[in-house]
Image 1 (cartoon, rainbow over the protein chains, first blue to last red):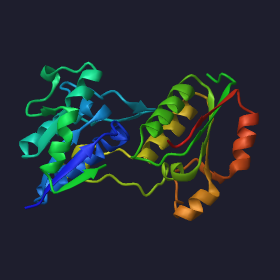
Image 2 (image 1 turned 180 degrees about the horizontal axis):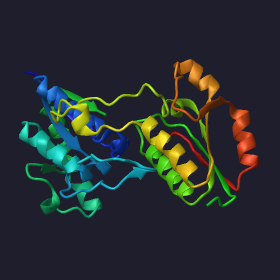
Image 3 (image 1 turned 30 degrees about the vertical axis):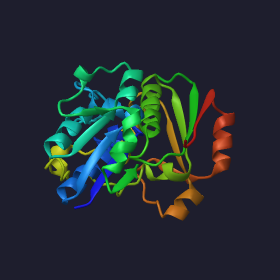
Image 4 (image 1 turned 45 degrees about the vertical axis):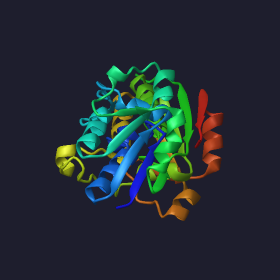
Length: 127
Length: 137
């Protein structure tokens, strides 16, 4: 079976209105549809793997966002579904994020190893 | 209580794709709560924000129904902003760029939204305390 690597870089765009990240979501759907997909979080998207995010409290007039996004939970669910999730270690370090702050199951990969990761997949989808 | 001040905002991003739309709605909310009048000129993709036909949908990844997920719509938020403006004695004037609407077929909006054009934005800017332009990046 072909292996796909999805790269997520653009983060927190429309996540409140959508209640999730559209690219994490669609990759979970790809996995459910039988695709052997892995995920590489880079740049600002590495923050998706940080445990304990809280996006609650948004209101417009009397309309409240009663079910806010839980992106760390969504990453966890991807791992549980069998999606290999990687985060670029230098991008984590640049943002002061320690390995211990990440949800379990996320693997870190150095920038120099990213090309090797590409080679381990048949197609690379950069969203 | 009405402050007598007016803020005009122009935005371009469509719903569900950018943080800027959420930010603009938050600014509108904060302004009308303080009694400031707000004009919004929705240009290009932003004309889809108040579309009445937006609907909540289930989430097959989370296994939740539309009701369980409390899926929001931007048109619902905009309706709530019109109500909030009224409750705070402020005026919200939301103008959708007509040509942008036509090319997208993006008509049928929630109550309060009206059709207009770039000339409305100029007039709004001239008559406002300040203007905030938030373009697409």
